[in-house]
Structures are given as C-alpha cells and as structure tokens.
Length: 343
Image 1 (tube, helix red, strand yellow):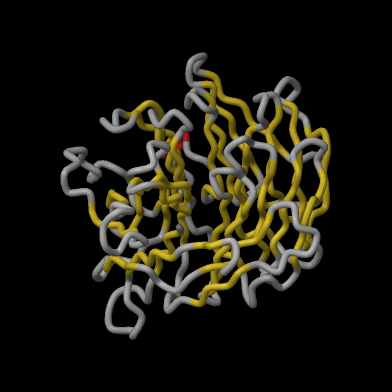
Image 2 (cartoon, one colour):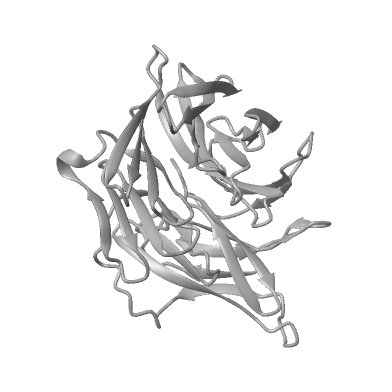
C-alpha cells in the first residue's frame, strides 16, 4: 500500500491538497485511490515514516504534521481500506521544528530525526521528545540548500549533501565533523547521500555538466574511490537507498529511473522515459524488491528492482506536486516505509 501526497497549493486551483492511499498488487499493478485525507490549504512537501510503522511525519509550508496510518480488521467489512489521519493523540509538539524543510529522515531504530533545510541548516533531534542533539545554523550551516540526509542505524553518524557539491559527516558521539568534496575539476552538484551497509563508505549522487553520476567515498581517507556514470543528458532529481543499503534508486530530470547496486558499484537496471517529466521522489519496499517513483506528471510507477526491462505499474493522480510513502498492510496493522519529495 502506498501514500501519495501533494496538491495545488493555497487558494482555489481545482487540485485539492491531500494524501491519497492506493495499493499495489503483483498481478494487477497499482490500484485506484483507496482512501484520502485532506490537508486543507496546506500542501504536503516532504514525508518521513517512523520505523515503528504507525506514524508519518509530513512537512508543509508552515510546519510539520504527524499522521497515523490505520487498517481495518481483515475479518470486518471493507478489509482492504487503509487510511491516514492526523495523530491527535500524540502530545509531542512539532511547532519547534524548522520551516522550509528540504529533506527529512528517521534513524533505523526510530530514536532520531534529521532535517535538512533550504537555507543550509541541519538539525538532529531525539524522537519523540524532540530534544536538539545537533543544530547547524547560521555560520555553521551548509553554504547552500540541503539536498540529502542520511543516518546510521543508531543515529550516531549523520550525513548531509548540499546543492553546491559538498557532503558533510558528523560523528555525534565524538563531536567531530568531516567534509567530502568531489576531486573532479568540473563544478558538481550533490544530490542525495547514503552510508554503505558496513558504514565504511559513503555514496553520493553527483550532477555535473548535464550528466549524472554516483560517487563512492572511503570513510577512512575521505577521498573519492569510484565515480560511476548513471544517466546521460539529465540530472538526478531523486535519490534513495533501500533499508539494507545494498541498492540505490535514482530518478532523473527527464523521467528516467535507475537502480544502482552498491557492491560492486554498478547500474543494475534502468528504464528511460518511465515518467514524462522529472521524478520528484523514489523509494523501495520494505523487502527491497520493488522501487516506487512518482513524478510531476502526476504518475506513480512501481517496478521490480532486478527486472532487466522494467515496464512498471502506473497510477495517475489528480495531484500537482507529489511525494510518496509505501505501506505494507498485514492483518489489520499498517507498517510504513517512505520518503519525501525532492525538487
């Protein structure tokens, strides 16, 4: 089951701001809308799903809202319906969180939340009490907009990439900060980052001179070890790593979708023109066998990670700006996996 969010923004544009729930069935593909939740005048812009599988944090223009996913009992009527609604029972105040969030992610153990912002600020909080662990603002902020964040499983190592081609690494316990830079002479823009499964390497999406690459850096030397071309004639617009950190999925500015194997670093699967326009967000299923991408053309596509010729399953939605989360519905419970839109 997946949740797609977006809308036409403030005012009457004919496109409602909402979160839409749909389902994926292996034989039938993506279904039509199952349920939806209006967000009123506020447009969903980013999503992060808590690893406990019950809560979905959504960033709007003026702040964040926490939603909870519900599924009906399989023995009751309407057993296929999964819905999301604001989590009013939670006492955690989200008003202290920053605005203009570009990317957000929970640690695998669910105890930390990292936020990257338009102005280059990076925040790390404990969850759910939202105590600040790290606040890189003002002169300590990145010099350009944050384009990607990642955490190790315990939330003790934090990565953040910026539009101007820098990647910063914070070791929270040792209170150390490191900086990675592309050794390429040409100007690059970094778009997304991920730690390797053993925590010894960093993968970064890199755009340069109209083409796209995935670069691998060694944590010991902070130097680039390998640089693999992944898309020609277009830039990376979305970047996501699966939960076991063995694969990356990339979306391009011309609608291309590429699955990259982390070790050895190589392109495993690509589908050109999967979407008509740029990909706004991408994610993997919990099992890691399926990749879901959404686009500004109001389409959602689910494809196999290993398929040589990925045809996908399409769902067209009446939404202008898209973000997505993947849900797995089991016996009346809902567990979530998700991501936020990137532009």
